[in-house]
Every structure is written in structure tokens, then in C-alpha cells.
Length: 192
Image 1 (cartoon, rainbow, N blue to C red):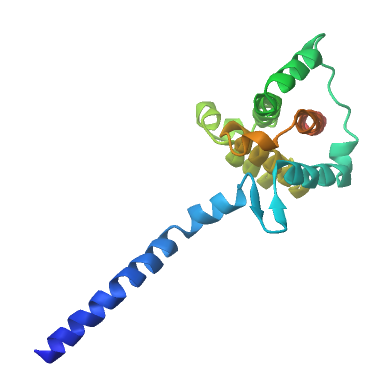
Image 2 (cartoon, one colour):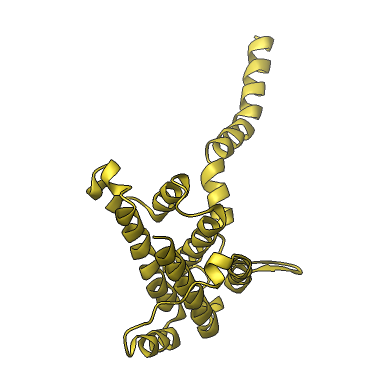
């Protein structure tokens, strides 16, 4: 009986730690994704926010000649003013609005380069932007740097769309985001 009690005691002692370790192992990818997409984090002297991530994307755009030098498409009269009004009311909504032409341009580029013809067109329209970007990069239509910038803009858009850190996105950041999104659209039009 003593061995049975000892064995039962050991099992009881290890059950919770084992469950936690197994749970963390099973959830490591979702947890890693959550940590990667953190909207705002502050601990003692360390702070991470939308503006910091935006500055990183701006630096990437500035270092990529194909993105920085692409002619920005002309907007319809009143479109820029309309965007600025949205940004004044809700910088988060403006960021979501600025992403739409990027995603449309990804679809247009896939169609134009006939990558859609390799599978059913309806299958691509249900794909995530991540899949579209990956397909364009694999086909060597866009390079790794452009792909990285687009993914970074997508992550920022997701942070805004899902309401992470509402108070930290400013009007100026929304305007800067739109400028980078416009540069990406222009670069994608130049490629295709």
C-alpha cells in the first residue's frame, strides 16, 4: 500500500505542472503570434506602441528604393480630404481605410500576372492577404523587402481593426500610415 500511496502522491504533485507545460507547448504558436501583434506594451522603462512599429515600417520603406521612389497614384478630387476627415474622427478607421487599396492591388497583381489562372479565381478571393503576399513573393513578382513592408502594414492594420490600444493611434500616425500604403500601391502597380 505504501508504494501505491507514494505513486498516487507523485502523480498528484506532477499533474498541474505537466498540464501547464503541455498546454503551453500546444499553444506556443498562437501565443507567439499574439506577442508579435501586441498593440501596446509598457513595463518599467520599456514601451512598445503603434508609433514605434510605424517608424520601423517607415524606415523599411525609406530603405527600399522600389517603394520610396514609386510614383504615388493620383487620387480622385476630394479623396484626400475625405481621408483626413476620417482620420480626424477616428485614426483607427482611417488606417483600415488606407489598407483597402493595398489589398485590392494585391488581387489585381495576382490577376494580371495570371497567378490566379493556376487555380480557381474564387479560391484566391477567399485567401488571406498573408497567402496572397506569400504567393507573389514565391513567384518572384515582389521581393522579400516589399513582402516584409506589406506584412508590417497588414499587422498595423490588424492592430487598428481589432481595437488594440485605441488611445495610442494619432491623427498624424494615420496620415503617415496612408502615405506608406500609397507608396506600396504605387510600387505594386509599377511591378505589374
